[in-house]
Amino acid sequence: MEVKEILFMNKGDGENSYVKSSGYMQKVAAATQPMVSGAVQSFFRENCSNPPLEVLNVADLGCSSGPNTFTVMSTVIESTVKSCSELGREIPEIQFYLNDLVGNDFNTLFKGLTVIEEIFKNVPWFAMGAPGSFHGRLFPRNSMHLVHSLYGVHWLSKVPKLTNEGGLPLNKGKIYISKTSPPGVREAYLSQFQEDFLLFLKCRSPEMVPDGRMVLIFHGRKSADPTLRESCYTWEILAETISYLVSQDDVQHCLLSPSNLSKMLLAKVQNQCISAFDSIVVACISRPKGEFESLSLNFLAIRE
Amino acid sequence: MEVKEILFMNKGDGENSYVKSSGYMQKVAAATQPMVSGAVQSFFRENCSNPPLEVLNVADLGCSSGPNTFTVMSTVIESTVKSCSELGREIPEIQFYLNDLVGNDFNTLFKGLTVIEEIFKNVPWFAMGAPGSFHGRLFPRNSMHLVHSLYGVHWLSKVPKLTNEGGLPLNKGKIYISKTSPPGVREAYLSQFQEDFLLFLKCRSPEMVPDGRMVLIFHGRKSADPTLRESCYTWEILAETISYLVSQDDVQHCLLSPSNLSKMLLAKVQNQCISAFDSIVVACISRPKGEFESLSLNFLAIRE
Image (cartoon, rainbow over all chains, first blue to last red):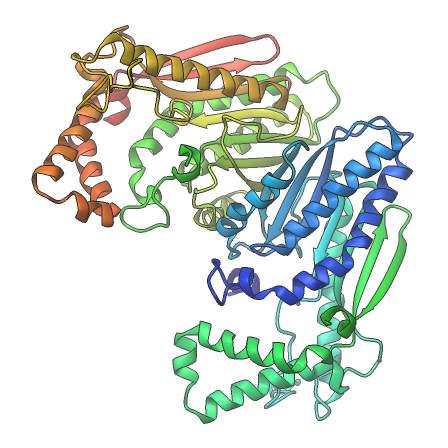
């Protein structure tokens, strides 16, 4: 079974759901909205000599079940209204395509849209759910004006091949690129990311309109060394937690009750390791010029 | 609370789900596909002098959680391929907008799309979920080439006002237009349907492209008298069932366990009353010419 068939954020809106436990992501979303707003404004500015746009198509890739995607929707609506008012142009209807894997909880996502309905009663907007992997085609040719992804693009489509030619495991006892991992492990992860990211861009390319914009927010690293503590501290916590569960003979119990596992991981991650990441990359890409603007944000600055 | 906020078909894919108990609807869908196919073919034929279409946008309104909407999708894909091949034109990408109320089980719907993925691997198609009431705007202006609705349009948006000027109930003890109901009851239902259907058409009008097509399949009646047995037999069964539950002191139990109620109703409806309906109307509307073609199908012929 492929990863895309089984991967999803915790469903519903209970205590352990993504909806209730994505506070940190909300802060990242809030901190990166100026880039989203800037992309919308520059799109309208550079296209103001064209005929008025009837519909602005906007995709949020890896939107999960809310509420971060609602922050993005609000920013796009507000920026569109502001840009069009400043340029003296009619406000287009805005069509949002909210994408995530098929296992995502779209039911909860759709119920949450009432938040946006209540705020933007006088702006014509529509929201669609677009199920599927962004490592494949999602939308028709030449349709998207703005593509946004918050913390989605660094997810790999599958576990890299981590065995040597003899079929023996390259990274035995580890779940990440550690100081003791052989070079082949790093190369396997890098190769998988390169393959996935290239495929992502190849799939988006025909979907974007000329001069469309992409704003991609994902993990980055300033250092070339992936084994530095700040790069893999999250995985250390995860590995420690799994080891602890094994030692307590609790694995079976936790597998039967995934919410327990996620709760433990959540507590560990939130309390101890959030400062360990190095940076967030916000990449703003303009097509077809291929202009690339990137911004690096410090995790701690967002956290506090 | 409005009807549109609480109304949905039974979720999931269990024994009492819509997915598993919509066999009759599947037969109606199968019987009406020639009209859908004809609408697609006539659309391409009449537009073959225009520049090639890049994307064919198709909406299915009131799609529920499958599998009937998959029948419609298959028909549209097959008809598009056939029409374009016959006319020597490039096959456009096909974008489906699957609509139902926010409470619909879109998660189950999206999982079911693998059926279509397996059949049509070489045709470019995409599917979106479009949550919302079709008594309001759902899509951007000038976007839809084909709008289809199977058994959706005859649902009223709300219960009509069934009280007289003094606030007393007009239809006491009844849940439908019966022989003993005063004329005001019939007028109230008719007025509500007229209001809803007019609103439906007003909302679709700006959404359709010029020369777009609508195929609407809904209940109809050949007789002007709504109290004939064949028109209200379903409601008699429903009323009888509720009376039975009240007499058995089972109402509270059944309300706490809605699947029991739906199971009883389903059994009653499927076993006893399906032949009672008079006809199905299939309306095919072409915009902006306003041409209207309708077909009346006999229920029993479909049932058998």
